[in-house]
Length: 206
Image 1 (cartoon, rainbow, N blue to C red):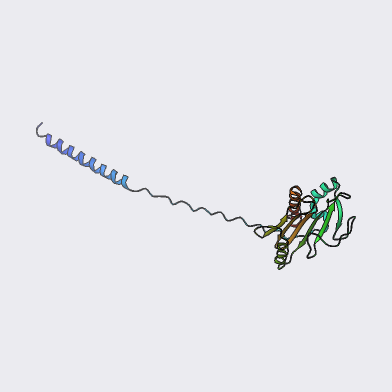
Image 2: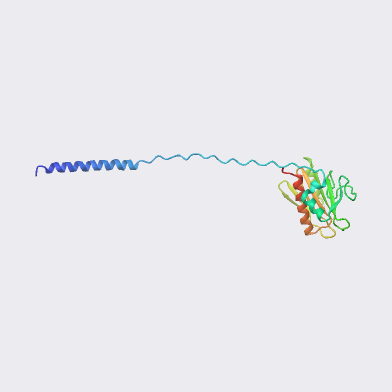
């Protein structure tokens, strides 16, 4: 019995050495960094193409200038064509009241026999170098002026008897005007809406 004890001790020592060695391998393996996966590059979104601005297109007559909705509204309310640049209407008029220069298409509407009921739409294309001259002409009239990019507006609210409601919208290639004999805040708001409606016909998107 006493002679076998050293062998058992040696065997135990061998087991301890093997366990320590295996533990060392496991620790070394655990310490190795795991390989990282590179993220796949994502394609950047390309900017949406900018829509080209619609070109100025002058309609052939007054009904096309004011658009079908206003045309129907005027007919329903007894508003008729007084005169236009082609000689139509129930009255004669030489030249536009709202656009004194150039060669505009103008259309004067009103209720026959009703004082201060007349108002005029006028529109014309502008040559490349004509906008500055128009802007100078309108600036000299003392109207309120505002600008939004290449769009310049000259306006006057007017009053209910002496001063007309006026809206001029000038773009690099076109000019539209609404001039109402009867002014005041309500008619001025209408004149602004009418001018915007005419612009939709002058710059058709389809």
